[in-house]
Image 1 (cartoon, rainbow, N blue to C red):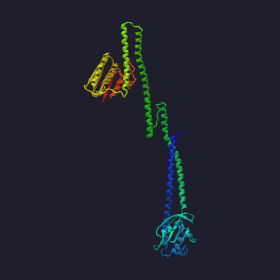
Image 2 (cartoon, helix red, strand yellow; image 1 turned 90 degrees about the vertical axis):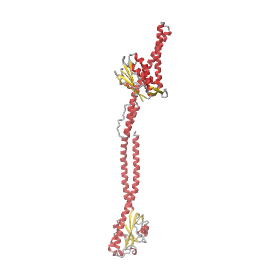
Image 3 (cartoon, helix red, strand yellow; image 1 turned 60 degrees about the vertical axis):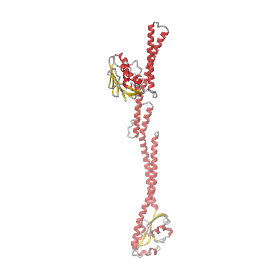
Image 4 (cartoon, helix red, strand yellow; image 1 turned 90 degrees about the horizontal axis):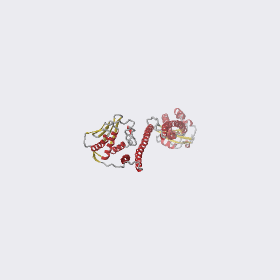
Length: 485
């Protein structure tokens, strides 16, 4: 069997029940035998008391003195009532019945009255019983009877006449009968325990397999997840800890599946980024190299054209510098150990400065920037240069994706700042990823972008505890909102 947990559970259940059975058996053995003996003693006591009372009543007024008879029944034959009762004493007592005097002389033994007995025929401790009886007590003893050749229970009770104790009635009952009853009880208990053990083993096996079945499903699901099949589910519905564990595995499966898809998207974005960066780097480097080779080889001799070549190389150098600076900026901002210069500044001044800088870019497309605000002072703790850079990135992005001769609206109200354009908007598919590194929306307007601007803006916002969100609709426009906490 490969199901080790089922084997362990079955073994644990069986061992626990076996120990339980042994304990119950031991307790039963002690209590059952003790109870059986006590009940037998009580029954003997009741019989002895009833017989002694009857003999006492029959002896009243008869002048009979057991002590003067010394075991002979001659005088009793004349007492027909008492004599007949004593002759049938064993049958009445339903066991061996003896009558002894204070000196342990056997006066009569019921139907065996014609036989002679001695002190040695009495059970062990019989003298103690007789002494207690003549003190007025009903007493018990357990000992071996040489006459019956077996362990016996002896009960002794006084026989009274005219207010005096005239003899001791002893009822002797073999323990063998009790042992037989106890042994029968043991057999029944043993049989019951065996049946219970077999039944419990079968039941525990079924329960263990039922218990381990969902665990096996979860193991198989975990193996599939380890193999990369993140769509695997346990399909276990139980309202217990196992159900909660299965539900957690299913949640993990969903998370891994989602992470896998995001990883694929991120990998594609990374590849696109490398492709874009390679292109962005290769193009200006190729142009610069070609221009330098032409100048060095003396192919270009016209001073005006040489000057154009110099300008082209300068512009390409600036493009390379911008790209490298963006990469460095992003690397610094994502480094938790990189500290920015924090001081109390007026955010309204930062925003106005960013608008003035972006206005020159907006004029190239005849775009008008409208700024509305309800206060001139908005003090926060931040880095002036970084916050200005963040606003310029967003405004520059709005200009890039806006139509010519359109408007950009910037509103400062309360704790929030919104920058809204009337441009082409962002599709639902692209919207969740616009702040991701390496991600760039593929469009004519963004052909020169590196996909790092919005990521840098997001990092600056995070470092200033600013919540940056975006809402967009294709063909209508995009709104970036900054909420300063």
